[in-house]
Image (cartoon, rainbow, N blue to C red; front, side, top):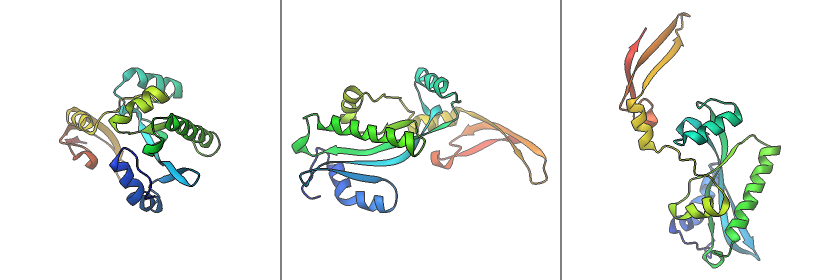
Length: 193
């Protein structure tokens, strides 16, 4: 691994210090891409999902809802390309595109024969945007950022039904204030019956 060096120090460090540890913890699977015993690149894959309601692009959201016949409250299974890098010695020669297309082909086969999934997700560096979107036909689905999610939660309202242990049904409504879910720093403020 010591001979591998790409343009990103973060990706170099991930491969050399974190990839194996994370793989042993079943957080991802990192595959080395080799040629003549030289590491020319690597890809790290992990499971993920896409929360349809977090899409900002309403046109894309409607297309997905219509195609899959689902509501925006659905979570759609996906595989994430967590990290992908090509060694500097091999970059800029179209090799990355060939490898990513091979990875997508393998993912498609997995989706058809082993496990259900609908999307391949990449949360790449801004510097990789053209590689994925322009050169390899990935679509930027414009997912809401965590700040946008927090703002939506602060401004939103909630209503839910629940059944008490004694079997009586109850309803609660209210407004959200500084976060509903612990992920977004939250507590609901409202009334219940």
